[in-house]
Amino acid sequence: MKHNVNRFYGDYWSRAEKPIPDDDPTTEKRYLLLGSALKQFLTASNDASVLDAGCGRGEFIPFIKELGFKVVGIDISSAAIEKARRLCQEAPLYVGSLEDTLPFNNCEFKAIWSTEVLEHLFDVHACLSEFNRVLREGGILILTTPFHGFLKNLAIALVGFEEHFNPYLSHIRFFTKKSLAECLSRAGFEPVLWRGIGRVWPLYKSLFVVARKVKLPKSAPTIIG
Image 1 (cartoon, rainbow, N blue to C red):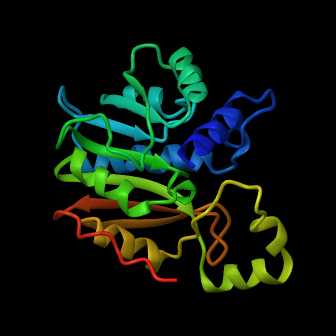
Image 2 (image 1 turned 30 degrees about the vertical axis):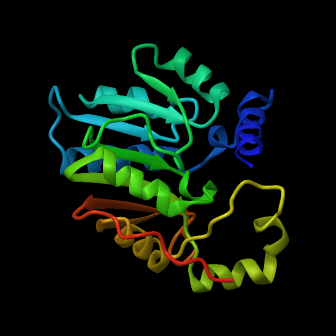
């Protein structure tokens, strides 16, 4: 299965047409919120390192560097990393799955930025637990993921179910604020900031959350059914 996942994202980033992130209307808002969060919760210094987890072609890496932080990128797709290397020639970049053991030391980073990635993962707990391991004590995880809430889900069910849950698309996880908070808590994080991105409540496109590492992860949840 892992080979198929690697091939899927390799094809995604290699195809001639523009990948979806190029047309994402929330990109500018994500820049603003990311910059604000890094300035609020971190102090730029020589050892203030940030991991861009699921960095894609690296569009956020130069922005993070301009804020005064060291930045490292990782993505499952070697094609994406090749694009990132052309855009971010000085940043260390790695090919690897976020669901596997990350190629970094314990407590290596002060912050992790992971945008529109979590919804693509099968083993969410493994990913968040690895984020916990490579973050320093009190470090912060900043992430975005598509928002699902009762009223938005009702609207989707009524007018857009087939399009939204198209089985050929890459989203396999669908988070409400409550379910995302539960996943973060189990992995040892405490959310300290929530924002909505795109549209207006209750139809936000995505959730933006800052969560602080406060404890070690619990064991993986029992799979039922």
